[in-house]
Image (cartoon, rainbow, N blue to C red):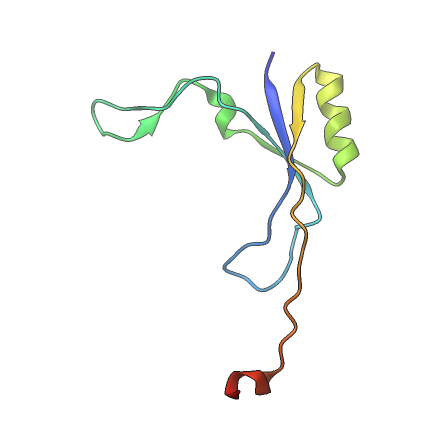
Length: 93
């Protein structure tokens, strides 16, 4: 039985906006370790579920999908968002 990890997508570090950070994502836990390919040296495994990522509008929708499929799941809590309020004049103190 596959185990899925459900989490809320973090903000992209390369952008200032919060596009799609309200969506929830489902990824599968790896079932086998990655090993280097003898020809190229790239890391890989026979586990194809590592490539699957599903998006959901709410946490409840992701949980309901896992339960419908009969999969186990673990919820990763969303880190709290802290705002650092700073005025431009603080740079010259």
